[in-house]
Image (cartoon, rainbow, N blue to C red):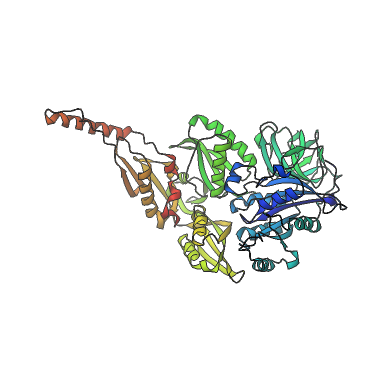
Length: 604
């Protein structure tokens, strides 16, 4: 790779609400700059995972290097693009990409207009002091309303002559976007002669190279054979390879100041790289770079191997996945019902779903997953505060003074015709109405404060359903607040199933307990003995269902004779069933542990 003057380097990312055309625009940029040959071109080129292609969403931020000349006699520019996700669960990926750039393309759908993640991403970009270029995409759609979307962008502070129009699908206006990138986004700052300093904005595990750090070089250069140091731990390693993304990893001679690329340094241990850390040269006194906020886990669930012998395989798989997904957290835990497994932290339900699928596809794991919960804080009578990520670990109620649950401030963006149903949904979810304001003649922002537990399950699905897909929302964690909460235990055959324990609001506890018992009665297969299914708060049973035993015809072999023969066989069967009830083991399927997600009573 030739050395580039920093004046001819541009680092940018594409940010937008989900499904507004980020990946399609990235495809056109790669095509027009000749980064990928037309024969190799396919939709969602940068979405490398099968999951991303199947779902049509971006899960991981993807860097790529492009070269571009606006005309034959103009200089060649080196462009580093980072394509980002749009779903609220992957907001941490966006923040990491922004930390490695000087500018961003803000893409807005010409028919949908400004939505939740649009504004959330603008806020993130302003925090990083980035140059934003607004782009109205999908102008070829029959439902495109360019004047309305321009008006929305005007209200956000963008001038008409700043706003670009394009159809990423057809390639219209994409060249103008490239020219605007060069003209408006400033070149990277940094000193090429200073000691090496780079921000690790992502990482990946490679079975041959070990841990691969995705870096944005600020100062100095890095090449094979250099010694680099982790600012947080002080560990030193020799660089074994540096390279760029084209869009696959391609080794190069050196990574220079201002560039985005990757670096390997014989880091065979998974914990050798920490995303957000600063890599420096082997010199003292180098100031670490200011990183970005550590992602905060919002949803917790237990992951257990179906085959207990694969516990170590699951641990290694989680370590490798964590290197590629720094927002994912895990620690060992033990369940009386499920054996040895891990308590895992996620950013939301979609994040949980993606991690589970990746573990099954990429690492061949067969998993049992417990129902998701959020992090509670129990204030004990002795003044101690206990963090409760697993509801079954909640201390006895007699020792607890109060239970605090996490709250969020949600911003819901919706056409005004759906205000009524959305406010009803907010009331059902124990929401506190804060504010409502119109951002255009027909679009409104409604602000609520919700207990996170009411939102993480199915709020997004219900919101989309009642608004016919037009509403969207974004949220921020605002702290823990006291709630009238109780621990709901589920007992199967008189034994408490810790994996089904949950913390619920007292007003909903009876309805949730009854619904869950009914659901478990459907899901747990019948055995040779009667199985009671109970919901209890402390020692008080509030709901019960009974799974009837399988009836075996023990008198089928009696073809006649005295009736006492049949009676003796039936009495013998009754005694056997009593013994089975005492020592019998109940097999509970995976669907039973996820039944909580399907409870209407818990989610409405």
